[in-house]
Picture 1 (cartoon, rainbow, N blue to C red):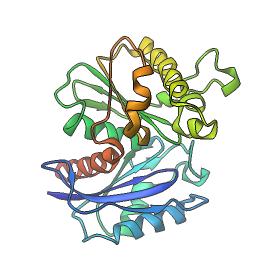
Picture 2 (picture 1 turned 90 degrees about the vertical axis):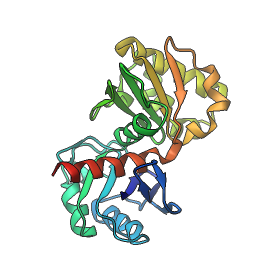
Picture 3 (picture 1 turned 180 degrees about the vertical axis):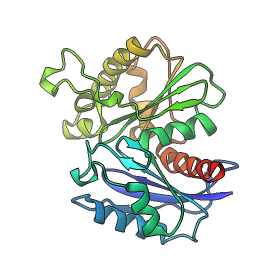
Picture 4 (picture 1 turned 180 degrees about the horizontal axis):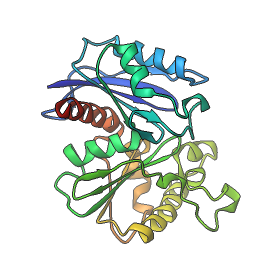
Length: 253
């Protein structure tokens, strides 16, 4: 079954049809820059433009960088404030004329990694952490998603110069803004993941987001008392996970 996945990010909105038997794209990914400001009408229009590059899909999964409850976006940490309490699922379904499933972007990436990638077959507690504009997280217990964790907003003592918020200390956005050397970025990630580990004691931590493509430059600086591995699907994980959950939603309806 081929389902369309669309990943809404702070800098780009990306989409591709996904073969759910393999977790691979069936055609090249399409990317359009995220409109600024990324308000509700502008993002809906851009998502429709991305979807319009492909044949109509039976269902569409869309990731969003926010807490998503019952199809409604509840937060807007890194997007326009107009998305708070927006009926995202209904708005996208009306624009695309197809059943739509909307979910948190890190949750989608984690679902893909657990189904097809670095977390496949791993029992116990697994955490996916994505480093991008912010820090996203996804939590799994024996393969089952616990949705809408917001571990990127953990308040960490000793980080007062960064406001105490984890993603203002160790996100990829901060790495670029402060022009951090890879070693220093890795040390910041280590500090953050050690704090996360002390709270959860996971069996596995998967690191994703665009920076996972360069894991060989910084991951060896991350010493945490559990296994830490880069995402297998890298920056495509959100699209794949969104498509998979859209198919599951349609099947359960």
